[in-house]
Image 1 (cartoon, one colour):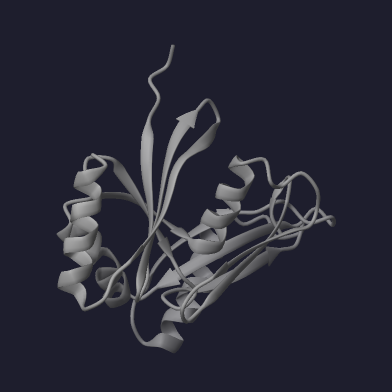
Image 2: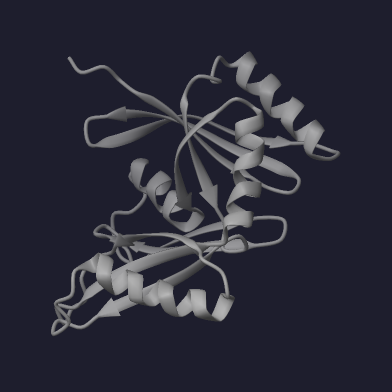
Length: 194
């Protein structure tokens, strides 16, 4: 029997930290625990609250996946027509180069392939973030001693959590996370993010 791997998911907000503990079971994840951790004060109070919670539940050594909001990153859908046969990495690099020219700084980026369009074209979701924003996003988890293994756009994390619980069985499904300053929305189908 394969060893079950647990992972910690965090959305570090201005007034709360949303936490999810999941366990890999085969090809999917089972949600074991969800927490909404409010705090009052600044970064020191946030760090102390999160460290205490991690220690109380023995979660400080789990690999951590961090959610990134649309406030912190730019999410750009890319649709490549069926006639565009460039490798995905080359198409994305061209988009990022255009963005970097406008922003006048190099950005950090990643992308995920979405379900192909009905016309056979390839669809991607590109996430672009400035290095200074990424450093700030990673600061709290790093100061808590967490090992951040991935950063995921919050709409994708929300879709994955709902899908894990069997909530996406028909199309379309709207996953909505209402935060203090930003509301994240993902529209999904059983095949993935639309």
